[in-house]
Image 1 (spheres, rainbow, N blue to C red):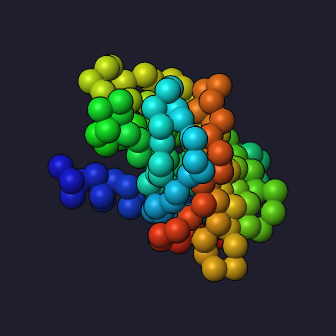
Image 2: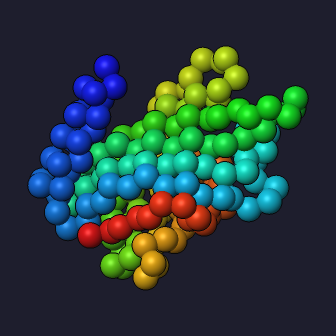
Image 3: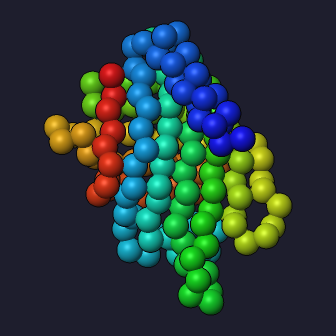
Length: 156
């Protein structure tokens, strides 16, 4: 199953790169977020993110987005919030900035049912060192921009 998923993700990434070349990127990163960051009451101390998105000059987008918010529950145990989304629109206002939006499913990682259909917007900003920030809006919650400290990002 894992091999099929990797092949599917590779195929989707390839299709996104071929079909929507103006702003295409595929990355996996690990970042930290600022102090006092919370999501639905859960303290968040970092996130892991992977995405393969192609953005057309028309504003449409194609690709997958996955982020894991690394939280600590009230018992002091790790609680991962898994966010899986599909991008449907996007833009590249500058060479080092890409924004994409769509809907996602949020799994709080606490045994409650996942919540589908949550709108999201992600803003990726890179610097000369292929690092940068990830800004994320989930529904009506805006998380502070997270700074890359492992991995890299590229916007083409």
